Structure formats: C-alpha cells, structure tokens
Length: 608
Image (cartoon, rainbow, N blue to C red; front, top):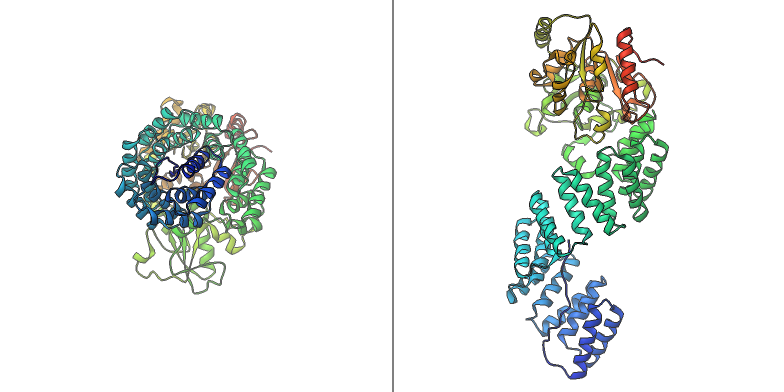
C-alpha cells in the first residue's frame, strides 16, 4: 500500500531572484531523483533564508524519504509554524507521523490538509491508508474514492482501493480497480500481482497463474509473486514448478518462510534429505519458527524418529492457532503426574487426526486422570463411548457445569508428553464403537440388498481443498478393473464432490450406494461394522474404520503422509490395516493391480 508525498512548485512568498533560482533548482533535482544535489541546494537556500517554509517543507520530505523521520518532523513542524495554510505540508507531515507510529497525529494532519483543500487527492489517499491500517476499511474506501474523484489518474490509489476491497472479500470489485490501474500503467507488476491474488481468492486459478506470470515477466525479482505462484501451482500438484519459484524466492530473500516453502516442495516430491536442510536453515534464522518445526517434525516422524519428531512437533504452534485452542486459566499439561487430576484433551486439525489420536484417552485414564474431550460437534456422540472418556463436548468448557480442570492438552501433543515411540504406540483396537441399534438397522438393510461372500466399502477421494489431494485421491476410472472382480459387493462410502463419479462408474460400484443416508459419522461407523473390508485413500473414513477394528486396505501416493512412515506395508497405529503404496507419484496402475490380485486371492497384504 502506497502513501503519497510530493514535491511541487507552489510558492508561499516571493523570495529574491537568486533564492528563487536555488529553490527551483533544488526542487527539480529532488523530483528527478538526485537527492544529494537537492540536499546541497536546499542547504544553500536555507543559508540565505533559514525561515523559508517552502524549503523547510521539502527538505523535510527529503529526510522522510531517507527514513530520517525525526529530522523530517522537526523541519516540517517549523515550516507549518511559519505557514499553517500549506495543505501539502500538512499531508506530508501526516506521513512522517505515521512513519513514527503516531497514527492519531497523522490523521489530525490529514484532516488539517483536507480542511484547507477538500479535493486534495494525496491527502485523501494518505488518510485512507492510515484508516485502513487501523481496520477502518469502509471509511478508507470512501477516502480512496474521493481521491480518485479528484484525480482519477492516480495508479497507486486504484491499487490501494483494490487492496481495501479485497480485504473485505469484494474480489470482483477489487479486480475492477486493478484493471483501472493497468489501463493507466500496463507495465505495473504490482497490479498484475494483486489481480493474481484476487483471481486466486475467487477460485479462478488459471487467471491467477497468468497474472502472477505477467508480474514476474515485468519484474523477475518480485519475491512475493514467486512465492504466491509457487504455492498456487504446488496446490495443483506441480511440485517441481513450485520448487523452481521457491528457489528464486530463497535466492532473493532467504527468510524462514521462504525456506520452509522450498523444503515443503521438495518433501512433496519425496526428496526427504534435501527437504530437511531447508527446515534446519529456517530454524537457524528463527529458532521459534512454528512452520519449520511442524514440517521438520513431520519429516522425522515419517522416518520413524518418534523421539525427536514428537518433541519437535510440540513446537508447531503459531501464536494465533495456539491462542484459539488454549483454555484460559488452565495450565497446559506437559507430562506431569496425572493421578487424581482432571484433564481436558482438546481436539485439533482434521477428523482423521481426531480418530487417530483419540486412542490416547484410555492411556491417560490408566495414568489416573479423569479425561474430558473437547472435539468438533460432528464427532459427538461417537467419541463419548471411547473407553477412558469421562465426558465429550463441543464449545467452550466454561459453558459446561463442573468445568474446572487441572490441565489441558492439545490432542496431538499427547504422544510427546508420554514419550511415545514406534514400539509403544497404543494400538489396541477397537477404541471407537458404533451404536448397536444403528449396526442392526444397517445389517437388515444390507441383507435386503443381497448377500455376497465379501462386502467391501470404498472411498476413492478426499476433500479437494487438501493440499495434496491431486495425488492423495484416485478416480473411479482408475479403479475400474476392481469392479470386474467376482464375489464382491461394493459399498460406496464416498461423500463430497467425488461422489458424482458414480454416475459413469461400473455397475458393481453403483449397486450399493447408501451415502445419501450417511448423515453423520455415527451412520458411517454403523455401516462399516457390517462390512468385511474397507478400501480407501488416506481420509478420515480410513482412520474411522481402523479405529473400529475393521480391516482396511489403504491406497497411498508416493508422497504419503508422515503417519504411514516410509516403506512399511503395515501400520503401528492400526493392526488391521494394510498399506498399498505407489512407487511413482501419480501412477496408480501398479497399486490397483496389487489390490486386484489380493482380492482375487483372498490375501490381506500386498506382495513383498
């Protein structure tokens, strides 16, 4: 966001000819980017007339532009004492106050400028910038519009107005502003960059990519454009392309955020040793950088180094994320004795994470704690039946009776507090239990649908908003050969947009589709209990089935998640789970062949 200061030709009085010539020369040098020459000329002018408000004003502007704000404030203050009617000086003095962190003083200065010149576009823009920084975005928009009414050719104001509208998520209007800026200055890299952000927010990803690429064509050292373009194409699965842009960003500005982005793009390609280097570099620069701790923890856990991995994972928090989770007035549990203590375990991240880590409630109860769970509402009342859980609820604990706790702990921090190793993962299943009446209702319903030797549930896609979904999910077309196998009844467990693929799927996949009746995890759990096997990609349903103690065949991409380790075909978390892994990212054909052969032969594990 830009703020406007200017050097003009206005005269406040009529100095002698030689002084006037010095002032004009100083202003000309200043306007044309010759600060040293301008400074020399300003000093000569002040030697002739130390009380010249015009020279004091613009000599102050020169100091402001150099970052010498205290000196700028003194010079402009003296200029205004001598001539309090100079609107431009009031506006520029406001910029100095804002630079010094004196926002209220800055607003007063802009008001003084506008009182003297109500159509002063620079002052309107500067006041809008200050208001926007305070969160008064609506009022800022009004001033941006007034600035443009006075001078519609101000490119920076069009950009600033677009930024304010985007902050209010009025992205279509913001795009109009960026278009106006580009009509005035077609080579504005910032306008193309801002447009890319707006297109991305609207889900118009192709247009966003084109805008970021145009910004980079105009300014190859545009760090933010490299980062945003890399992030966008990375989410679309082009990790190599993302790596290239992140490398440019790191070369230009090797800060922790950029180093973590580069490391993440390498990890997504399975280049784990290279990935680690960049997380270590980020932490060398900022030992408390949460994203680096989190990504490094995932890498260590994937390697099976649970001792270091969990310790690093415990430092994963950004302040805003932690504050949203923390329980005020209650100490966070970090491994203290639990005998006779009341402990609140607070759920975090996705449903699959909840299902995986709810197992620790029983362990904590065995250590002597009275364990309550605070989880997302869709998980209730399923999780209330977990052994070791005293009570499960959603919402704020203060709204519950008997809400005093000795400790609270984020659910996924429990392993670090317990010192969990691969060999000590609590893997007793089931620890989730479906409602018996619902199980029986589905048994009757599925019996009416026909009995076969083997009932198999199928989940082929996760949420499309997940960063690795392009590789995590598979299509029914790629699974088609499974539908040709005999003596199997396929039960679709797929929710979300991917369910539409059933319309063109083999008849075997469409034969038993009760997903419209799966209104909750309770319903899904009860249906799963009537199946012989669940085949799924890495989604919450796979964790749910594993926690229910059902056999699960999990289809994993080559860049699989940390919890499945690197090469194993079994899981220490779910004894009844078998892992079928890609060897080449994006190529499901060998995996489907393995699954098909295992189904034909009645095997419960992929060949070794």
